[in-house]
Structures are given as structure tokens and as C-alpha cells.
Image (tube, rainbow, N blue to C red; front, side, top):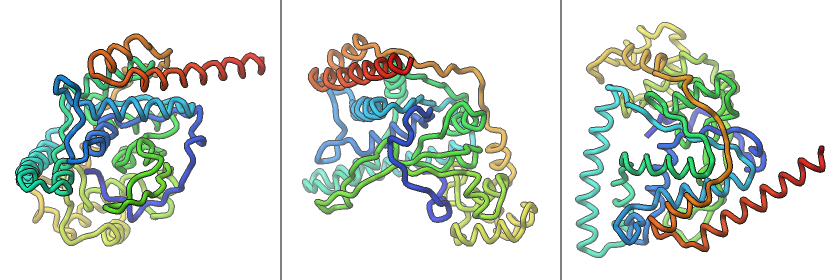
Amino acid sequence: MGVAFKDLVISKEIELDFLKDKIILLDAYNVLYQFLTTIRGRDGTLLMDSKGNVTSHLVGLFTRTSNLMQRGIKIAFVFDGTPPELKQKTAEQRNQLKIEAEKKYMEAKEKEDVEDMKKYASRMTRLTKDMAEESKKLVGFFGLPVVQAPSEGEAQAAYMISKNKGFAVGSQDFDSLIHGATKLVRNLSIAGKRKKGKTLSYEAVKPELIDLSENLNILGIDQNQLIALAMIIGTDYNPGGIKGIGPKNALKLVKKHKTDFDEMFKEAKWNEHFEFPWTDIYYLIKKMPITDDYELKWSNVNEGHLYKLLVDEHDFSEERVKSALEKFSKGNVKKQQKSLSDF
């Protein structure tokens, strides 16, 4: 879901080559949900192997990770841990929406309405524990770091970026900004081309770089005010925010009251919309559990384990996997030759 900051923040388009040799910490769950939502059959059904196991997330993870690695981008994946209690209500709401989508999907299936089947199928997306664990395996076989967050992955990634452990957080959501990520890259896992709505035409999709400091200066607020702004608009802990107050009016409200959040939320009528005080969410975001127990270490691709997982266990095309791995080999040889000539 994420915070609806799109109309407020500024970003600049960048080329993938700009990120070469830079460390990008990917919000793993965000990326995997993208793959599960978009990589589907014509009727909206998830891709599966011959044993009925879902493979959409693995297809996306293998394809996109291969591409980014070939571009020389140093990626690491940060996985969610235990969600905060306040997020439980959001999870229940999302689950209810998925149940409703399932009903509409079945109705569309009976009518053989492929377009509606595809539409509602994407709203039924669920990332299971098994999918997450299998994704960790695949990432590890690529020789990439896996960071396990104690709670929210985006908060952990933001913390690491703030400690100069990487260049930027990679996510479609803006949430890492409220956790203090100094830089955010969007569209990294979908860069290329995408279909334009229901048309047959395609549009170019480029990565976008968002600088936190630059945006705070332009908005005329500080980090604490950004958190308050997000809470009025709506976060994962108070979905939808305060009804009747859009992003631009929320910004005006924040700037009007400056750091007097009690008065600000009083004027916004927080207590009429939520059964808990605004401080619950504010301090949850400020004090989200994070850890220094991780290692950012890159190693060689384990081709044998990749083949076994993808080809033997999940029916991936042997040629496709082989082709991707050959590109790695060529890229590694070029890097070695360059470093030798430089020496």
C-alpha cells in the first residue's frame, strides 16, 4: 500500500548505468509482491510448475536480479521480520479485499471474462512464508546478501542507508523516506517497458531517484514533520489516513502547526477517525526495531544450486538459465581483464 507521497515529492529519472557499482538495498517483500502481481498468465493466474507450485516470484526474481547484476549494480535484499501489532488491522483489511476479489474472480471465470479475471486475480496476491524462504535461497545462490529485518524491511533498509551501508533503498513505496532513507530508487525492478493500460502500446519505464534532504528542503519541513504528514495522508498503520484531507492540504496543516503535533492532529480530528492516539504510530515509526546483525558480503554465483532449484525443482527452461549464467561469466571475465589492465 505505502504512503501516498507521489504528488508531493520530486524525483529525477536516471539510467540503470548510473547505479553501476553502487549498493542498492532492495525491500524484498515489495519486490516480490510486484512479481506476484504482474507475472501471470493471460487469464491472471499465477505461473506454476508441473507440481502446482507457484513460480511467478521466482521467474521475476531470477530475470530481474540477473539483469541488475549484469549491469554491475550491487544489490542486497532486506526481508521483513515480525510485523508491528498496529499493522494487524491493515492485514485484516487487505485479507478481506482479497476474499472479495476471489469471489469476483470466480464470477468472471464462470462468464469466461478474461479481462476481469486478470484484474481481480492481481488483487488476490499473497506472499507465503514458503515463497519468501525460497526467494531467500535463490538470492543466496546468486551470491547476494540477505538481510533479515527484525520487523519492517523498509525501516531496516533505511537505517542501513542512513549509516552509509549503501547508496539507496530500492522500492516502489515511499515508506522508507519516513524511516530516514537518505535516497530512494523507484522502478528498479520494473525498469524497461510496460503495457499502457488496456492498450496495445508500451511506455518506457526508467528508474527514479528521490533524495530525502532535497525533498525536505523543497517541502519546507523536517523529518519529524514528514512522519506527521504521512500519518495524515495514511500509512500501513492507519490506512487511508484522515478522510477529507489530501496530500497538499495535509502539507499545509503540518506547516501551519510546525512542531505542535498535538494541535495539528486535534485540528485534523484524529480522534474522530482512529481509536488510538496519534503518538502510537508516530513513535512506532520513530522507534521501529532495527538491527546491526547483518553482513553485506557478495560472492560468486552458485550455478549448481541455481540449476537444481530452478530447472530440476521448478521446470525452468535449462536454456534460459544457462543463457543468463553465461552472461555472468562473460561479464566477470571482462571485469577481471579490466582490473588486470588497470593494475
